[in-house]
Structures are given as C-alpha cells and as structure tokens.
Image (cartoon, rainbow, N blue to C red; front, side, top):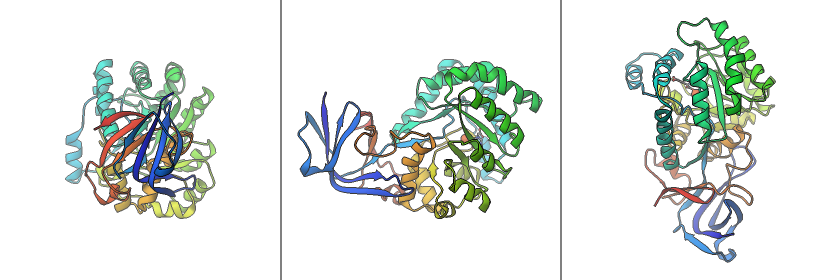
Length: 387
Ligand code: NIG
Ligand code: FE
C-alpha cells in the first residue's frame, strides 16, 4: 500500500466534534494510505513514506460537503433572476419552467449538465455532494434523474414532492408520489425530501410523503420555512429528519426543538442572495446549540452557484456566522446533515478528501470573497482538480 505524505502545511484545519469549533495545527503534515488519513501531526515528526507532496506553507481544509444540491435539471432561468433583481418576488412556481426542459432532455444531456456542475464543485473545494431529483415530477423523469444521480453520489434524494406539476390535482399528485413514483425510484434513492412551503406542499401532504418514504426504507430530510413558517420544524424533529433546509423563518420554539434534536438546520445563503430575501440569523441557532450546515442549494432557479467559498463569505457577512462556524458548517456540518461521520474533518480514519488554499489560513475564505483560493482538490487522496 502506497503511503503519501502531505507536508509543510502552514495551517491544517480540523473541524472538531463540537458545533462550530475548528482546531488548527501549524507546520503540519498528514499521511494518506488507501484513500484514508492514517497519521496527522507536526511535519518534523512525520513517519517515512513512499512519496510526498510539499504544500509550501499553504492552508489545507477538509473538502466541503454539500448536503443540498439540485443537479438533475436542464436549462437555465436567468431572465427570472434578472426580473427579481428588478423587484419581482421569488415564488416556488418557477420550478415548473425547469420541469418542462428537464423532461425534454436526454439522459446524456442530464448527465453532461451534472458532470459540468460537479467539475465546478471540485474547483470550489467541494469533495462530496448530495443530488436531488425534483425537476421531473413524473415517474419516468424522476427515475431517470435518480439513476443518473447515482452515477455520481451515494447521497441521492427523491424530491418528487418539489411542487405540484402543472394541471395536476395536488392530492392526486401526492398520492402518486407516495405510491407508484416512490416504488419506481426506491432502488436509486437514499433520502426522501419534500418542499413544505407556500406554493409547494402543506404540512399534511408533507407528512404523507415522508411517512411513505420512511416505510420504504428511505431516510427523511426536508425543504421548509423558506418562504413561510407552516410548522414543519416540529414534523422534521418528530420524524427524525437528518436535516431541515432553508430555515429562513424560524420561531424561538422551532429553534428550541432543533436544539434538542438530531436534526441539522441547513442554511442556504445562495438562496437568500439570489432571491433578494432576508437572511436567517445564524447567531440565534449557534447560541441555542443547534447543529448548522451550509450548502450551496445549487439549482437553476433560486441559487445557481456551485461555490461553497461564496456561501461562506455571504454566511459570514450577512447571516451572523463567525468564519470558524461557517467553515465548520460547510464541512463537518454538511457531513452531519448527511449522517456521515467519515467526512467533514481531517483526522486519523477520515477520508482523504481535502482542498489546498492559496492562503495562509482559512480566514481568507471570507476575507477574499470571489477569489479562486482553492488551488487543488483531492478525493480519497487523488487529485480531482488543480495544479
Ligand atoms: O431549494 N425551495 C425549493 N427548491 C429550490 C428552488 C428550486 C427552483 O426555484 O427551481 C430551493 O431553493
Ligand atoms: Fe433546494
């Protein structure tokens, strides 16, 4: 087994188990063997290895874990974005424009679009990602979407309940999603998700779809409280959702419930940024002890970004995160939102998924917004991007 030493690391960032806390080690090194980290410590105490990579004093962070991404779609909606910037409000209805384009796309077009976005993920330091369906909204296209998503990640999410497709009765559609569509996608999906919000699904419809998914062995997660608070946090906690995503509108009671649960609150700065909406206050969540994740929400409607550093910068600038909390949430928090303990940090036994930054420390991720600081990205010890 080949042992590779990554050495001369100016600052090695190791997100701790405690929410929001980063440990850092200067003059550090680590050893990668068979895709895993097998040793971490001071560079001058490193064991002998078969090969080494000199990081030249740069900062190394664990790869970002993007726990919320809608990569199975075709087309784009830049005119909708342009109109929003001129004052038009965001509504869930825009999803239907993408549905028409996605249904018309071939498998290869869907695959190529996802592949292009995944290359962008690697460039931004994302090393693991979830992929949702939800732009098919018919049995055939939801199955196609999830089959293709499986080619790229084990974390595939069935989001048949994204919106009610045009000209369909809402309750009849919920019935279809919870029975025939669920049966057909089940082999390709690990998670089940519902958009519980104004213009999408009610609390009762959400419960029905999630319970049907759980009965088929899928694990629940939720889109909720983006546009309005329909009371979905109590349901998410009751059903032990791994994560409830958006959380733009939360009551104090919601925050208390999240704090005493195993449900992560996933915040999506790109969505508020791109819909010109008010940002949630992360300070309140951290003060209450809620576990928080940051994700890109990459999708053609409300957040067409693959850049986790951009999300970190916005989270720090506008959502009340400290830089340490933002980096923790984009790494260990994302892994927690996928209930995955093998990712999101760099310690002995974790996957050798990491990014090298052209910066002396991780503070630069927020301090230098919009700058390409990631110089290379590694998944399981192999370079997937960079020089
Ligand atoms: O997470 N909120 C629901 N789904 C997406 C938006 C999808 C779209 O507008 O196309 C989101 O923001
Ligand atoms: Fe989303």
